[in-house]
Image (tube, helix red, strand yellow):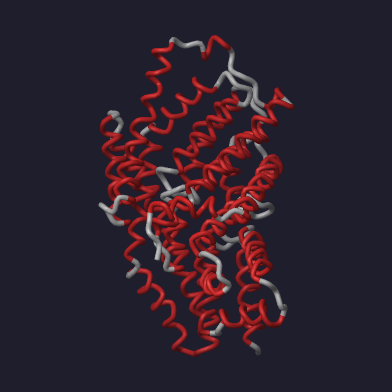
Length: 441
């Protein structure tokens, strides 16, 4: 059997296994181990062990549980809910104002968490019931929450960009800074869509009654204090890192400790809050670890087959594609894979094959990291198997059906594609900030 046929068989076997309902890490890991055993005999079984040792030696992986802990502590202690109350009062007078406030909340949560899961949980439990109670269209608001939560993997401290940095051997600090303006651009595009849609169809996002938002100015200013603690946490975490005072792992530890102290200052650091935070942190961290472990094993088999050279030969010599055509084809393949794989699995399996080719074509790998992450956001929300679609269904109330969720994401997927096209056409949007903060060699 040719190497190309082996690779095709591995991918198709993995997809078929996932369609049976197996967990992602099980589907990837089993296919990788079985393929290694068939190709290299008993020694192939050692690949899984070697992958686990490689995982344990990845010191930056310590950032994963720390950032996850920080995000869930802010959620469980009610600090995120305070932020939403602030947006509720200040923006409720606009048509679609609460939806805009939800997007603002998601940007702030993303800047304190690095994952889309926590943003989705906060949006679905805090914002969604309030939006539905206020008469907002259920289809539009479920799309707002899914699109807003997807910013968690782009806005620093993005966990996905940490993993990309390790694989591409690029500075995580530069990747984080490169995600700032594209993340804000997407948030702005989401907001423009909501404003325009609610102007055309006012019933989709009615303004709050005057009596509910007509608070004294002093009371409104008092509500702004809800943003002080999150801003301080973000400054301590990112500011110290950018200034070179703390390393990446130290920065994540500062963020986790700051969130803990913030909950204590608010008087909400109870045993129940701490227990729930640790439990959820452990669950999400273990899920990431298992997926990375399985994907490393799968990727090692591909590397052993010489897949990087095979892909380069296929794209450049056999098909005769130009650099931009290759780049666009890669992005399309990510979107297709993202309908049934999560971003971590895609990154660890496919990125080691694509990244060397991207570098050899002369593209900036910092910029490409941002393009990859935006594409992951789109893939997360693309039917039929987008990861965020099923997360939303699990957290949404019964009146929001899966059909509603599928329908809700289509406009935001189009908006994100516009954002991806803008960042692709104007790389400076991603590269300006890291180039001005760091002196790149």
